[in-house]
Image (cartoon, rainbow over all chains, first blue to last red):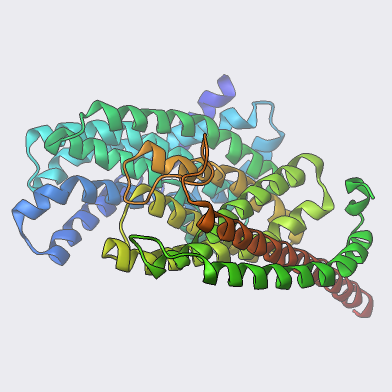
Length: 222
Length: 242
């Protein structure tokens, strides 16, 4: 347990101190949301209707940004070898790294959503459900992303490949996240139906992600 | 000959060289039969002659899913038993499966235009098959990015196992969601809902495409084994001359 909490503290410290820290993801989120109305035109009714979808897409892309450095940085400075030979189970270490990743990229997005939602003319109810769906959905995105990050750890052009590998796997989370956010505002499906499926998807990825990512790391570092 | 004997690539090559011409000939014969039966099959009372697209569309969909299923089994073979032919199978099956999935998407799109009035709708079945196609392309990209075959095989195997979660979603998408795509009509509990006059040509056509899949897979596996031998010989040559 001690090794795991040390791991968490280290990852958080590195994320905050290096390269703008957590805020760079929020900045990217803000830029994407700013660009969308410029591309679509400033029709407030339209923006209100597709706002949840835009914010979800922006969160998906912002989450992708930090992924290719997740294990690659550890691989380059040698700490990944130490982790692999260490006594803590690799699956748990990977899960802790995922948690740190979510705390520094996913959670700031969730917190930044209400003010950014104002740009898209979202009302209070839409904002509330959107924050709730992102809070539940972004851990799922991060933990699915772990698999891609682990697969691409030793590749030279990993970044693009991570995007191609991870995005198809995140399709269900995106579908049910947006469906739940829309259902609360427009109906006709009750909010609970897509939302519980979203919870299930996140819980499943919390299990599958660390195991698959740990298996991939073991195979690659042999 | 037991399956374990085939672990030896040379024995597999011998078998493949003997089987491929016969299997290829059989494929041609079954295709001829399938084409004649499909041409003589009655038109649908509502859809007219466009129902004949089904003889390409449905086998494409089945084999696209079969390809990933095969890769999933091969992925287990790679990760669990380290079977030397498993990663060759997985690598050879990916482009073939992608091609059949693509055929399913294209024929479905062309069929959708006259019947549904649109080339594409974002319903569950179509979306999940498109995701399968994207997963195929991702696996192929991964194979091509990692240089050393055995490492590429293990990375691709893990991605294949995770991607296999899409297969049940495709199969049951028409039952779980209310889709424009029609529900399962052949592989379902109870009898098929297709009239035998159309079902039998469909099954023959599916058999023909399955044989084609097998022939292409065997040939692609043979090429992959030979390609690896060439690579090893080149590495050997480079290390001895320098």
